[in-house]
Image (cartoon, rainbow, N blue to C red; front, side, top):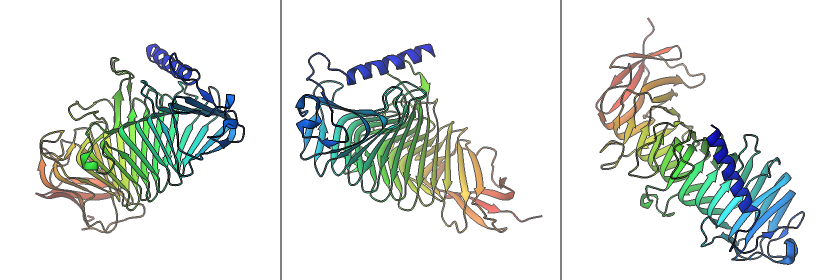
Length: 445
């Protein structure tokens, strides 16, 4: 534990030093001086009277509200946003773009985080495109670190190579209706032990895409991934008609703080998919573990849960619910298409490991199974049934639970053909067929 704490503190110290001073060979950092906001392109807004350009890093550290407007496109090598006294920095791009890029390693970065001992910090990006090679939302090593919140609002687009939310603190990103966030490498929510990262995608037109090809998910590299709870805690929430697309979705996994270091933390990841026309589409989805690339083994130590409700939908080529994973279907659906020679085993689209749990909430008028897989392996997983609030189904009512084209392996744990499973105080009889699994309310005796 001492080693972990020391390493995190050292990492935080390096980041803080990097953000607040120029390294050898780096152009001078430009610092915001204007109180109460101003124009990004105005020399009066910057200390020294010089507007940052393509060779400069920039720091915007303010008190209270700070609306910043753009009169033209801009390019810098790094941007650090912070402050005290409930800082709110609004970057109104006015139809322009801000490009944060550099050929220098570890530059091209956008940082958002509170001052040490400060209050929560919020940044709003609107009316334009902000692109960066990487972005970090809250990077301070303290369990008392306040929230850093990034909002993508009013037709804004945020593009980057890697996004880490809750590096070692509490971070949140909100993608609002009509806005887009595009990533071409990976997203990490909760990147270290004790951290917490939240990513919310809400409303019609809100889009999160983690794929090399932003126009076609099927051309996405398998390495394009969203890691929810990578050593820390993570939450991905897609609701109210929003969409999220990625090559790989991991809910709860372990991660390394550096490539040459041993695994130091076990994460817990959760995904909520809810609302009509809400869609999460992936090539591979792992609940309670995950993997970083197509040829890598799955991480066995994480825990994860996914809840699909109120007509929300998951589409995946491969779905694996691992021993510490839980999938809950409460009025939503999961469709697993499978693909040739796909992990976790050739030809299997959905694989439920022993120890994993599938929860199905029974609703009035259920006509189709909430989980459909081209092929499925139950693997001795646990099945739980619940009743929707206020619902009391009549004896003889049948409910489709899972449909498939083919099934491998043993049935659900302790649920052979004809066995009884309780949903609250209602007994249901479980039956297996060549095309699906069903539950029928038993007659009272």
